Image 1 (cartoon, chains in turn yellow, blue):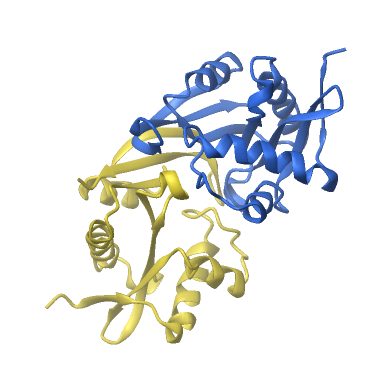
Image 2 (cartoon, each protein chain N blue to C red):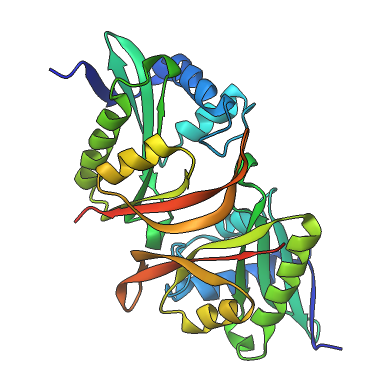
Length: 164
Length: 164
């Protein structure tokens, strides 16, 4: 059995989700969210009504979380969007990959025709490489779309894969 | 003086904005919104707190409306996004172009570094051509991202221009 288990989030996960969200966002190098985004706002975003939220557990500890949702409303809602966060303490254990594989399976199960990431920070090379390994390709580059906490304005990629 | 005047929207514009929004969205060929999106939801979206909303008037009548807002939160908020709607009764009069020029000037005035459209329906050739004439270029094509009311799944473009 894989040591990382994925399951839908429930209210008891609010604390670990917030801890992971805060740690990931605080570094300002992968997500557009305000590094000082308050807990209430973060949880409201991550657990929105149109969003499927999951957590990854290892040895009973929540070490990662991901969301799966339509990338656009009605006439664009057949394309999924997703976001992944791994606890800094659990990096390098394959948690991100495990969540992404689970996410792609869930997206197919829900009937999404494709998955799109709107803003993958180009300097986040580990993520870009993982998405490519999992079948995503870069379909566009938005010049300097991300204000990186250390590197200033850097490009972002639009990434996509068909699920059909 | 140009016969089309642009000004910020106020509450008295709710009715004409809704009429235009509804007429544009109902055809299901240019915007992802549900063609049956209710008035309250439409106005809430078009007049959100992080959104600058304008109307275009001709001879005292509101014939178009546009929004200008950050395309992403915090670390992506230096890139603008915009949406334009022209009353079906006022097509071919240059209202869209006039609003877009106004919008680009406003975006520069607010200090946005670039403008990005996330989903320009590829079959909306008049819009694509207008955006290209105004300096936007296609930086990505999302395969079958839009479910067109008549043509089924069609591609959508990500379009972009620097404002610097």
